[in-house]
Structure formats: C-alpha cells, structure tokens
Image 1 (cartoon, rainbow, N blue to C red):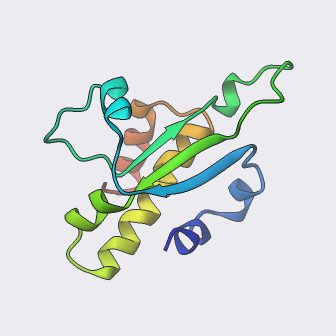
Image 2 (cartoon, one colour; image 1 turned 90 degrees about the horizontal axis):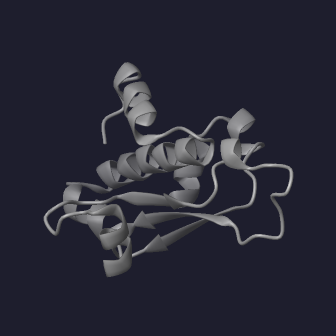
Length: 119
C-alpha cells in the first residue's frame, strides 16, 4: 500500500527525493510521542525525521537517511475500509514528503486546505 501511495506523488518530486527511507511501524514509540508532545489520545499517521532538503548545506553528507514512518495501526484504526486505508496512506506520504522538502507543519496544512487534502 505504501508503494501505491508513492505512485501518487508526481514524478518530478520523486526524482528529487534524496537520502530518504520510508518505513512502516505499528505505532509511534514513547520517545517519538514525547519528542512531539503528542497526547495519549492523539493519533499520528506518519512522521518525518531528518534534515529537510532546504536545511542541508554544502557539508551535508555521510549521514543516515531521513526517515518517514507510516504508522499502520493508527491508520487502520481510523479507516473504515481498505480504500480509506489506501487514501490515508497516500495523503500521509504526501504530507511527510512535504516536510522532507522543507515545508513546516503550518505550510503543509495550508497547502492541504487549499488543495482540499484532508488528513
């Protein structure tokens, strides 16, 4: 499903992905929740961790890949069908890739609202 979600990203952006891994985990770790100050009753579908491309300087190199984590259980608990799961994965991947390209949370949400992408 993640591979299908990646196919929804325009090729011009896929070509520019750099030093990025996408993984699937059941749910956020306690450390991730604490770092993000996520309350116990909040749901997190995905998470970008790394150095956005806009913050990479000339000395950027020899570093572990940035990581986008898709949280499977969070998405499955929220969705009502396999079709909804696929849509949520697609939107989550888009959202987290936007962070990889340097968009902060406010800007990502503005673009989602403008394009009517709901999370």
